[in-house]
Amino acid sequence: MKKFYITTPIYYVNDVPHIGHLYTTVMADIMARWKRLNGFDVFFLTGTDEHGAKLINTIHSTDMDVLQSFCNKMSAKFKTTWDLLNISYTDFIRTTEYRHCITVNSIVESLFKKGFLFSKEYTGLYCVGCERFYTIKDLDENQCCVFHKNKLILQSEKNYFFKLSYFKDKLLERITNSKHKEYINIQPEERKKEIIGKLHLGLEDISLSRTRTNVNWGIPIPFDETQTVYVWIDALINYISGIGYSNDRNKFKHYWPVDIHFMAKDILWFHAVIWPAILMGLGYPLPKKIFSHGFFTLNGYKMSKSLNNVIYPQDLVNKYGVDATRYLIINIIPFNTDGNISYLDLTLKYNTDLANNLGNLFFRIIKMIEKYFNLDLPYVKKPNILLAQKISRYFKINFCNNINELKFQKALTILQQGLTFINKQIEIDSPWVLHKHNRTNINMCLSSYLQAIAVVALHILPFMPTVSQTIWKTICAKDNIDNVATKYFTNNNVIPEGGFLPIKGKISMINIIFPRLV
Image (cartoon, rainbow, N blue to C red; front, side):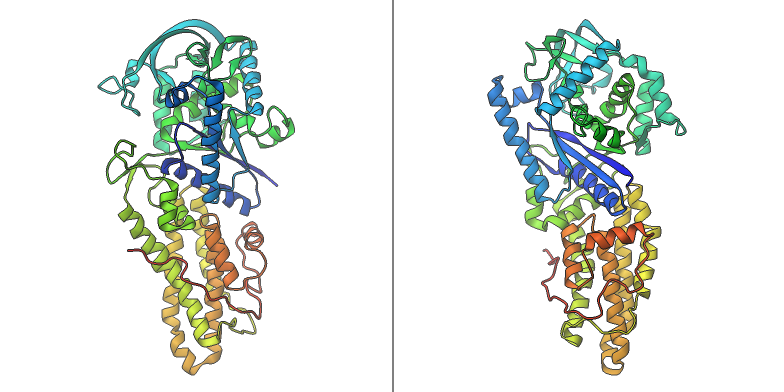
């Protein structure tokens, strides 16, 4: 099996999971599920970032036990949320874990021995929210952080610096030359252009450590315990500590390099410039693809606690359910732009796509089978898979290609078009008329609708795993849906000659899977 390694950022534990965390994580989960269905050996890593000055400021304590206890509690909240949303991560890495700490020590020591670290006094403007130093040119017109809108702190300390400037030309080559064997594919294109533009302006060496008197909550530098590893360097190393760098080198060599790093655009610089430079310094392969999505506002306003307009995953699940939340969060905003959402927009999309289209179509077919066949599978001598084949071919050309290109919203538009096509076919066939005059043809028609719905269930599996399972079991489809989906997608989307349904079976009557909301 060919490997596929996917990551989310590790999320900072100063706050509970919110809609921004959810957006990135569901995006990664959909791709992880999709690649598994296509026969890949997938490793999906997520986790929590648990060091740094920001955490000390959040809980107003430097006591190690208090800090660790807080991290334990907050990290558990992320795990609980991802379990709620059916996130199929392979491993969950925490930066306070031993396996991570010893990996960070090993990496920092290697960079030092290779001559990429040096010590110097540094004075700069520091944003605690970003956990990074900025120059005046990086700030807004009020000389505030562009992300947190706060005044920066002037700090002076003696640190170890990483020779980032050394890698400028190497980075430009790997980001701009798609034929390079270590080409870094940054998406979307406009973000790639932003990175290239900044690289052309030049690179400054960056601090790799903080003095322990200023930041004691961090991993000590192995050769100088008066210093702790700068939280961003610490955090980036999770991508290799989580796949066995310190305890299973065969596993590490198998999965590295990463195939996709998913993240929001505010941390792209760290992943597209600093992280590849560290890897080049170590002599390791570079990330294959880095995908950064935009920000979104709620009702036109930036989400913040002070405005009391932060949306939390549990809020969405309470209103829409788990699978609908997964569908809506990934479908309401294109990945490559900033956007605005509202509960009105979410509910409209829910009613249009899920209640009126998918849910109503499925329930309509089940009700006809109940009415005309007492929920027995319509008997046909030979499975009627013509409609299913049409839908399958349409999805293969459009739906599948869009997912592979990370255009999930376009893929779901194709899905809705497929559902509309099935609905139109029902209107053309008019089974309510055939019922009175041609029993054989109504059997064929209803059987064909079930086969087509089975194809739909296979394609929505990465997006709505529970609903797809429900549909599959309700229509008595053969085998486990995951097994069938893997065979289907790895066999070039070919429908088995006998279709997906047994000759005989009893349909399960269920409630509407997506009740309409007001």
